[in-house]
Image (cartoon, rainbow, N blue to C red; front, side, top):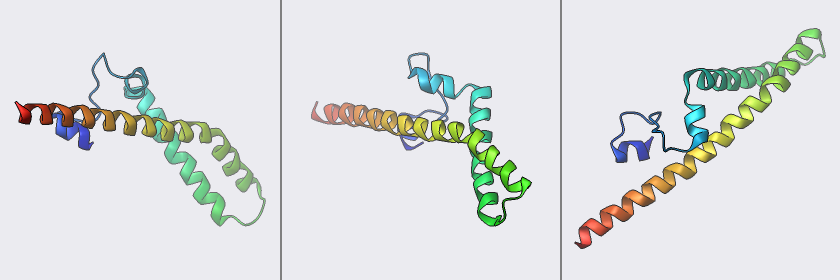
Length: 104
């Protein structure tokens, strides 16, 4: 978000066609919705499992939900790493441009 602010973008979700293909795919409305909901359901299921002490059918159901949504949550965190790398690269380019302008 900071790099978007520095670049003057209206939102950190704004991506142009030359942007990283992973980010273009991630920020399509349906994909972003699936990733956000899947991530939240994963952490809710972990929360529920933490407070259930017995191995009831409910515990097993939450366990299945956690297993099913783990890949979505893991991919969301990997994509956050990609976002961090891209933001660092953008800030580096912006800093280089600003330093070159000061030298002139």
